[in-house]
Length: 241
Image 1: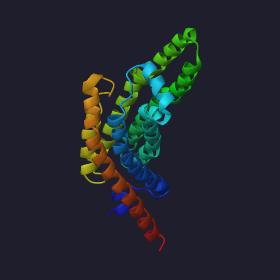
Image 2: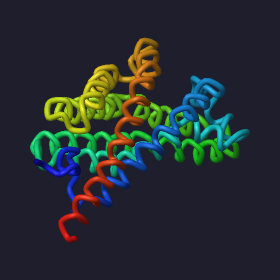
Image 3: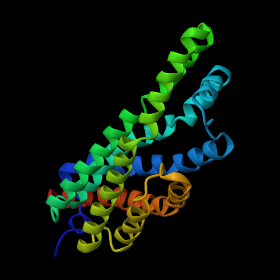
């Protein structure tokens, strides 16, 4: 009979990654209500000039409106993706690796699109001190940044994140890694993420609704990743005693 750690997809050589991934899931989960509150209480201005004014008056709010917290979330997802790969590497290595690659590319593209987060702040300071003849050029630079922020690269990042979630979850469901629930909830989460948040009001509504299964998925996986880590540690200790 397989050891408990093996049934849960754990591997003694990946114990640190499993623990870090479980912690990362908890961090991302904790950030969800904070980010939702920021969006609802302080929606970003619809114009570049409005963003400049916001940065001049409330720089921290400007940074939060331009996804400072979400950028942190995406970076925290790196150890989370690695932990999911670690849980699959012994039974579905190819699918786990494919999902990991999609996830890492998604993170990279998202960080690239968030160049505006700090650049808009710098442009706003220059805009405040610029002559009228220079302000038009600064507004144009801001428009370019916001096009990248909302554009096709962001949509690609969003969809790749959804595909990564779907592949990880489908593999976990098929092989009963961590039981059935994380795989099923993960597939639902991935499906709701296939419509990018920048596709008009429909995309925004679906993105908000997707937070519900996402939160459940993170709770389930955080619990199982930390449990798998302990189970693998117990199994490894038993072999040497």
